[in-house]
Length: 392
Length: 74
Image (cartoon, rainbow over all chains, first blue to last red; front, side):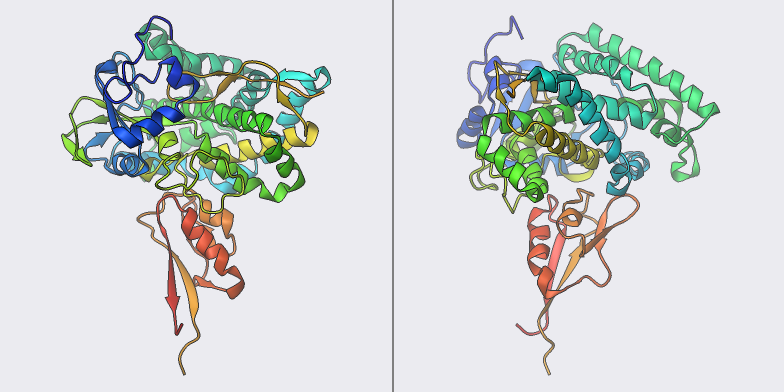
């Protein structure tokens, strides 16, 4: 982000939009863990950053002092944009979450796998003859956007629209509230039209499922349905796109891991969990709603907490050789999908997409390497946004 | 006659958040409900050849929800 004063020090003035943090946050988190494990900044109207697994876990489990009503740290707190259940606290959280869970169980997600594999191959077909591609733009980002459109029974080509909204909400919108509200408005109107259509003519898709669901015996309000649809889109696309991109980036620069996965495909589930740990894409946030303290650090109401599952996943107190990618790591209690009641609803979908994306790429293009500069996203979802590869 | 030593797995329903790690690692020992939360399959008794998988399921649960109880004589 241009024009931001650089962070003076990471313990008392950190800035997660600082280019040093955006490009390589891991040494910063290591330094925090050693010196000041719960860092703070006055930027963004006051934010805490627990860097140790233990403290991230404590915040995630404590819904009394840490509310989910704001889950993104922004320059100025915008009007609340509810997206239940991610923005819900107990007791509203549970029913809002329960209604979303059945379409995302492993069995439900398995039915989408053939479409995901075909999709990956359609994308590879477009660039394989060229011998180069931008794997972030031409592959990773296309997969979740198209698959979620498929689940919602909306045109897969609308994926372009989704990606623009998400960029405006999660990146530009951190500092530009007008862009944020414009994108949320467009997205809401887009879904409102689909909700109206599926109310009249239900199909076998996720929108129809939500419109006709009866949690607690009564239908959800249209606002609730629209909020949950916003969540599925915002939470389901750039997160997975980032995860897929980071996996491919790792395999491009680590030929021994790539060749081992080609030779030992049975290792894939273990490797995927390790890549999720090492490159966990998603940092959440909480708002402090009641004064409390964790490990001697006082948390003041009104301020935010960046809940960095990626930093927790790199804590050497929990993961031996935390800074190394060990693709056959057997014991891996990683927190890439969060901890506690807000565990990512789409984790089974994300895992399937990640696995399929890597498997299909390795089948078609087993040898590839980096072909230029990689750029990383800004904000709280981390992954490559440009990932040039060559494979000739 | 002392009972032979055997292991039994259990999932604490208050801790399980449906990460699905146990089921992915040891599908023989766990099953999922309609929300995707895990429970022990059947009586939870672990056949000798699945003991390693049972311990892996326990040590990969992000919520510390998987328990292993040792029954009988050592």
